[in-house]
Image 1 (tube, one colour):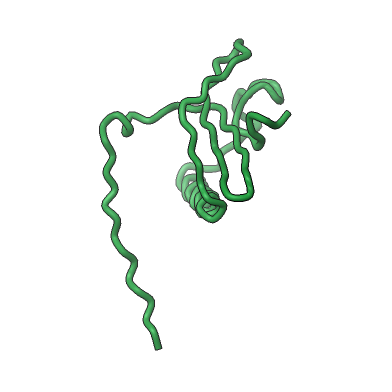
Image 2: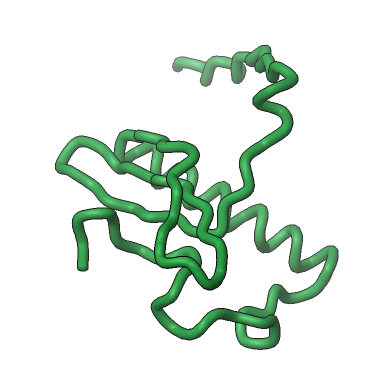
Length: 107
């Protein structure tokens, strides 16, 4: 009978510049058979142009791990602070900008 190995502790380093973060109000998601691409962009209301500030490329398995981790964190956030309301906050007209599926090549 084999025992499951203990999870290995990972030392993650976060340099000062990366720790500042990048604000994004638009995410474009596309995929190929082998990878998912997430482009994090920022769009200023009143302009018709968005600038991509970061692109993350992940395997399908890692994308699913990310999706599950985000879902779990949203559930914890809402348990602590209340439901995140999408309809109650000021939103741009449908289709103008925000987080949505699709990618730069999709219309």
